[in-house]
Image (cartoon, rainbow, N blue to C red):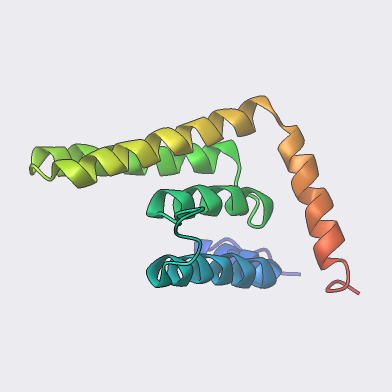
Amino acid sequence: MKKRLSNNSVLQDWILEHYLQLAIFNGVLVLLVLLRSAGYFEPYLPITINLIYIVSLILSIFLLGMKSKGAYILALGFWFSAAVLRIINIEVWAERAAVYSYEALVVGFLLMFFPRFNFLKDFINKLIFSSEKK
């Protein structure tokens, strides 16, 4: 058995193991964007971009296995983008990126301090995807 050392093959292996989870994740996000553009649930639950972002964070924990390190990297990316947007005087987007950074940071702290989410993620994956592995 050959040992794979290239990053491309590691990524390809991960994609092959999680293709169904990726399809569900992307499908839910596309559905939420379409529901937002059509204005469904508008008086009761406005589907905003912030709600779509929070749902994507939660789904990435349970479907894609995001750990606290991934949430911290995401928070750092949004923090840097907020800084760049603030420098070039696009205040509205800078504030939104700062809010996304804060939300990713909170999710990272929750994942770091409550490792039971990983147990719950494994349980959900076994429950939903048990027929796929047979």
